[in-house]
Image 1 (cartoon, rainbow, N blue to C red):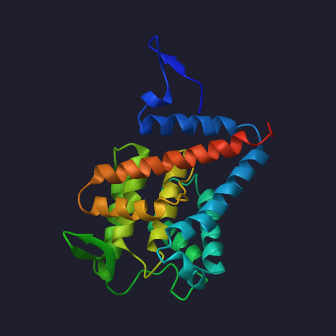
Image 2 (image 1 turned 90 degrees about the horizontal axis):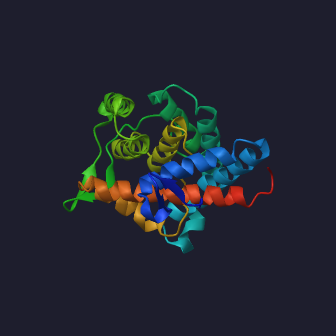
Amino acid sequence: MTKDKKTSGSAYSPKNLSVQEIVEQNKHIISGKLSGSNIKKLNNLNWLRHEISFTEPRILFWMPQKEQSAYFDYSCTKGLGEAYDYILEHKNDSEITPTTICNIHYLIAHDTNILPGRYRTSEKILEITVNGARIHTPDPFMIPQLLDNLLYEYKHSTKPKPLRAFDLHYKLLMLHPFDDYNKRTSRMVMNLALLHAGYRPVVFNRKSDKENYRKAIAHMANGDAKSYYKYMYNAMRASQEQIIAQLKSSNIK
């Protein structure tokens, strides 16, 4: 963490800052550390690619660890890596479109047994419950219009940019536009939104994320937006601090 600074004549430390303020401070620290060396940038990108495509799905995948290896294969890791490369290539695009989202899903799912980049044609029931009842997804014929609506809301939101990205993640997940890989697609789309805003992607690679990620989504579904945003901001901060640690451990100037 950076040394204490002074503002209005009084010193403050990270302990006195909100998590939102620390996220903004870390954003500038990371940008400064990546401004000089292309090799440093490449190493950092490669580390994030590994964490998002390899570590994160093994943390968030919901089957017991002893059963996980039988269902988790190389295709998933490969697809997530390709989708990560895609969002880096499109971080300077002017907007996120339905085509963008379908392209991300296609890259994640194209080596699997589902139709990649195609909207689902049947209703789904989510694992999330509201007042004890499972959530039914919208009818498939409504997906194009609802997707346009949520992207319009994202584009015109006046919330801070991280919150806009968190909202996009949640709303896309709840729309559940595809037969499978919706959570992975939603996280990748959120990370593209963060890249558009000058942040680095968030990676859910802590052991606690396995349970807390699901809980945060359930909180949001049950009207507790504060708990959802708190968790997402803390995940973003944790990712930034891992990135800073990676950069500090490099001797390249």
